[in-house]
Image 1 (tube, one colour):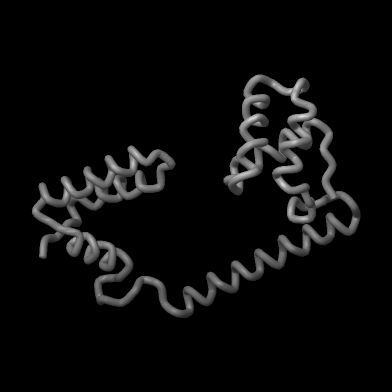
Image 2 (cartoon, one colour; image 1 turned 120 degrees about the vertical axis):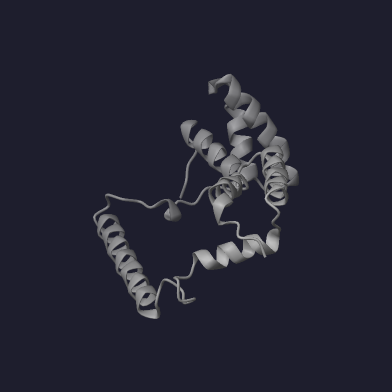
Length: 161
């Protein structure tokens, strides 16, 4: 078993690249990770041991005790209750209408509405709208596409419930 602690920082940076939206960057990060481990004479089992060791203190016990975790859990519950109460107070006074309460029409209908008003859009928005008209017929939109479509729909005066 090889101690990979000396290369832990480099390995961590490579792991962060796995979160990239770019498939090529993820593939290059994977190759770099394999190359780094083999150059150091280590393998993924050694890497797994490093990750496990990072979560423990010197005695082989995990750094966080049951009471630490319970305290964090209770603090999260309190914060959630506080935010919920705030949102309810704002909503009851009519000052806030949460996004969860907005009901947009189906993506297909929004795309058709945007297409009918395409003259009022920028070049990028026009191209996006044309794509959405066909795409909404055959597949669901990604969250990012849905958000753009909703933004354009509202810009053109589309109605939500």
